[in-house]
Every structure is written in structure tokens, then in C-alpha cells.
Length: 108
Image (cartoon, rainbow, N blue to C red; front, side):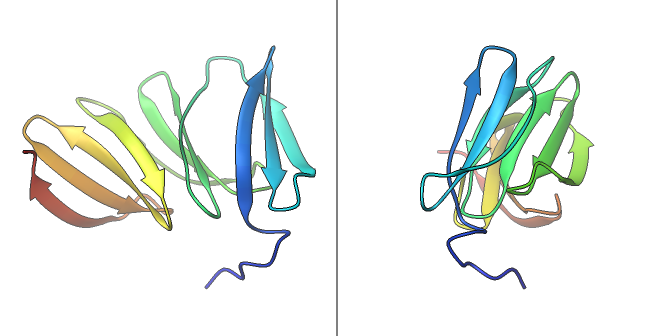
């Protein structure tokens, strides 16, 4: 289980120029990484979601990759708390930070 001290909670992720900057709960820059071919599509409390090419990646506050999965026929809807959601056809799937599917429901 991840500790949610101020140093591990992500408050914001911004793309500035060719860099992705990650900020902690105190507004301090925690890390950065190249934004080349990457699009930030969701920010949760302790990870963020990036689409790059045909892949979905999750990263922690230090920009360390946690997990990855194919983005084929998937659209990331967003992230919140400790999960992110993707749309696939008429279904919404919920995944955890390790890209493990934890729920599925019909899109309304």
C-alpha cells in the first residue's frame, strides 16, 4: 500500500514546452520527464496516466513507470483516487495503477 504523505500525493501534472512536470501536495516540483510523444490523460492521487503511441502507461510522482498496457481500441476517460477509466466500444473499464482491470460496466 502506498503512503499518502504530502510527498507522495500528486497535486498537478503539467506539460510545459517539451517537459512534463509533476507537483506534490505542497506545490513543489517533485519530478520531470520528457513530453516527447506523450500525452497526459489522467491524474490520480498517487499516479498519472500517459498515452504514448499505442500504449497506456502509468507513472508515480517521481516519473517512474509503474505499468503499461495496449491502448488498442481504448480511450482513457480520466483518473481519480486510485484508479483510471477507459472506454472500449460500449463498455467502461476501471483499472488500478498497475493496469489491472478491477471493474467493467456498460456505458450509458
